[in-house]
Length: 172
Image (cartoon, rainbow, N blue to C red; front, side):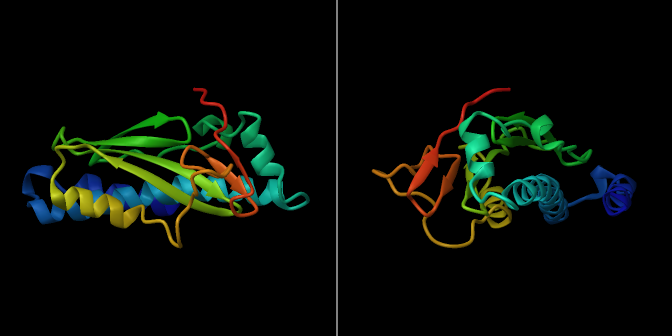
């Protein structure tokens, strides 16, 4: 918590008008990583606690429509200088405060006990912004879904590889 406050204090001390495009991209990347850390940290904590006794507990909760919103995870998003952040089911969307065309929606899916991202970047965003967002929210590993199985592209949680999948219940 104190680390975020320190980082944010530094960001607020830098005047926006004094930044060039490279400095803005650097700040945007740092803030996206801060968002990722805040969001993923809480999901991993909740998932770890739930799955400690039963490895399918988190999956079953998501199947029942739980753990969709920030409130479900007790996520508090940090205040940001470069982005406005809005909650969406199973993730969040960001919009640059400097360029309204630079938007992205990040959905966070679970595959067994790993997190994966489905990233949708606005069509008119700059190439630099697109590359940066994909670099921050790059999913490790192979394909995270397989069509024709319960763990298809619409599944927000999967268990035992492609054996079980659920699209959850979108609530807000």
